[in-house]
Amino acid sequence: MQKLQVSKRGQDVIASPIRKFLPLMQATEKKGIKVLKINVGDPDLQPPAEFFKVVRSYAGKSLPYTPSPGIPAHTAAWQTYFRQFGVELPMSGIIPTVGCAEAILLAMQAVCDPGDELMVFEPLYSSYKSFAVMTGIKLVPVLLPFEKNFALPPAAEIEKKISAKTKAIVVINPDNPTGKLWTDQELKTVVAIAKKHNLFIISDETYREIRFDGKKPASLLADKSAREHVIVCDSASKRFTMPGARTGVVVSFNEQVMRTLLKFAQARLSTPTLEQLGLVPVLNNSKPYVNKIVKEYKKRRDVIAEGLGKIPGVVFKPAQGAIYQALQIPVKESEDFVRFMVSEFSYKGKTVMVTPMQDFYITPGRGRSEIRLAYVLDSRLLKEAMEILRRGLEAYAKSK
Ligand SMILES: Cc1ncc(COP(=O)(O)O)c(C=O)c1O
Image 1 (cartoon, rainbow, N blue to C red):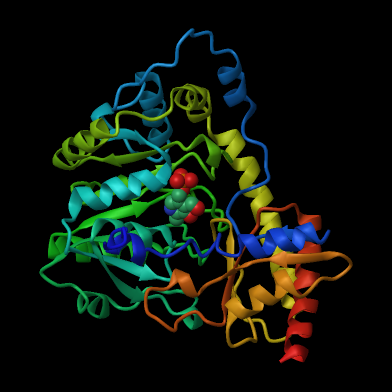
Image 2: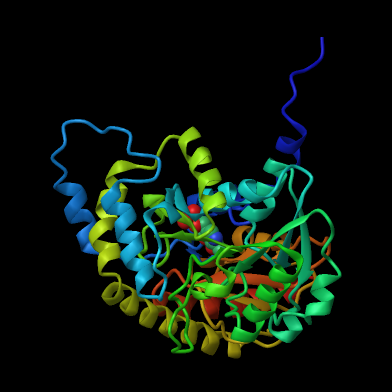
């Protein structure tokens, strides 16, 4: 008898690059070594207190399904939230999702059929790669070169990668894993290409306000001329430090897209009740909290830049946004270095866990000397982490 087999896509999907070193890390921790984890974008800050106030005072005797388009007060709070960026959405233009992750998965399926192509820029937040395998959608990567600080190539180069099967372009701004902020000109270029070739833009704005250039945060939805094209995927996870709330939204002015997304949303019923309720006051008055954490992340970005500046052979430009720093280190295989750091190296009973960048690329062989740091620890610990990284790189070079 033949053995039971999972699907081909199930076999093809990659393990999260962020989580695949977990067993090694746990073994190291069992030995009593403290691991400073700056590999996952799971911040240490406290979420807004109003959220817990609402959740704790929930007086309902039951926990029913919520409507697929969201609890009206929650959806209306997102409407209020978007208004500050000059985006006046109808309620039907917003559907709550289980994090931005589900928003992406639904948006991809709303615009692509199996076999269709989605243009992305690499390196790329790795869940897109998994979702592409799960949905049978082909990702076509355009390289944002590390050496050019991840600048967008000229339009003509991007257009070469468009085929009859291309349905949409993904923009992540501010970006994970590069810490890149898209310039106005780069956004204009992508919008112009989308219009010329009749493509959707999936705009992942998870980190919208987390930018360190002092400029006003924006949404691609504010560009009235591109409204039919743009689908924004958004999230409470990072700007409100509540990834465990698993609450995001998928947003568009395109009515056909929203009708499609609503059918998908109905099939998966609804998103969590308490989290939707808890987010209402947070979304209705988001600025004070967001301003506070952006200041903190900027401080951390600077601490990391200062620490990295002292490490020989490291190449980087300070991140412009999000909560990540991408860098080149003087090693051939960053995966091997990460393995060394979590299984062989420690300094004063501590080591550091970072993420190798290779799996953020689609093109094999790219990113082998790159790593990503997430600034999810306080400045004192980050300073210590940079010192451990410096010593770790030194020890690794000697071990080769
Ligand atoms: C660019 C980007 N998009 C989406 C997500 C997923 O966010 P959520 O926690 O809202 O599902 C992340 C999480 O790190 C991310 O970095």
